Image 1 (cartoon, helix red, strand yellow):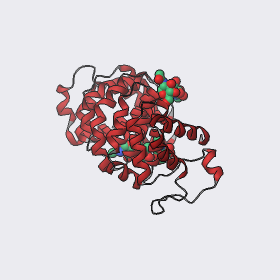
Image 2: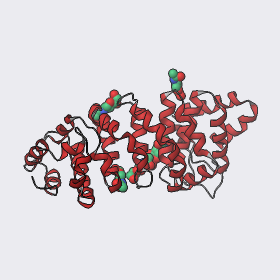
Image 3: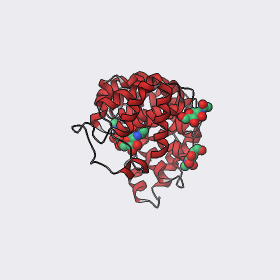
Image 4: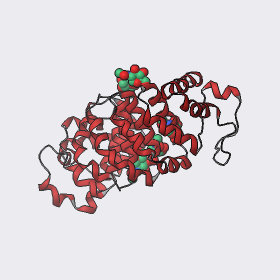
Length: 307
Ligand SMILES: *[C@@H]1O[C@H](CO)[C@@H](O)[C@H](O)[C@H]1NC(C)=O
Ligand SMILES: *[C@@H]1O[C@H](CO)[C@@H](O)[C@H](O)[C@H]1NC(C)=O
Ligand SMILES: *[C@@H]1O[C@H](CO)[C@@H](O)[C@H](O)[C@H]1NC(C)=O
Ligand SMILES: *[C@@H]1O[C@H](CO)[C@@H](O)[C@H](O)[C@H]1NC(C)=O
Ligand SMILES: *[C@@H]1O[C@H](CO)[C@@H](O)[C@H](O)[C@H]1NC(C)=O
């Protein structure tokens, strides 16, 4: 990718005119004599710069120029490359802070509205890397509604949908912003049931995160969920899915014990997750799983309520 990236930066220079060329020159060449204080990797050889095996670590000045470039260009190829480079740089905790302090989060965030799905996806990936920082999450949370809508409107199993789900998952590693997903739970279950294996796993990571929070239990149990959900508890279901749906049940059940869900039962509507999880069909599935060939699955089932 090194060579094509270089072509991209050169193109960026052409777009922005001669003044920007120096910036582009710095972006592609400047690391060698660049800011030593921020250098996060050892110096590299000429081959490193072109073999594309890793991305350059930029200093504050370079990050600022890159953000300016991202803000000012309309060229989709430049936008995409700038987002990828920012995303890669955001893998480092020092850069997560710098990008926020440079006002980079709204610049990157605005690209999730780009109609080009490839650009949308790269913006979501960059936000995802930035979201590892708790203070960044406070700035990123303003995009949660938009990301939820995008994830739910598909296209199903697309790269952009997965990127959105990953961002939502990482925005819910703490309980702080989980309530913002409350209105989307029923639709997330729909994506869970219709998506393929990769999508299912990613939706389940998100739902499992929500299920650890007692404040979300009522929203989860009250969600309208198609009865085909129970087929995820069949013995032949892939282990990475089966273990997660069992964890989901276990977490919800633990919250229920604390919150006294049986007292809330009348408030759950017909067709809700509550009636699926605590119904006879689910109980049968659990009894069958007690004899599952996989030890991890068996162990999960035994900590669930006795059926
Ligand atoms: C989306 O952006 C990519 C590159 O960034 C470009 O190759 C592609 O042509 C764009 N698609 C549309 C529909 O503009
Ligand atoms: C995000 O960070 C990971 C490492 O945590 C890195 O592998 C990935 O390339 C980074 N970039 C993007 C755009 O996601
Ligand atoms: C998302 O969160 C998971 C779990 O906390 C973490 O391992 C992963 O690195 C995060 N992903 C990114 C792209 O930061
Ligand atoms: C899900 O669909 C996407 C897009 O078609 C594909 O790239 C991915 O490999 C699929 N995953 C599984 C597990 O089938
Ligand atoms: C959320 O999910 C991630 C990845 O699956 C996990 O590492 C993290 O511990 C979870 N956090 C909570 C609060 O459940």
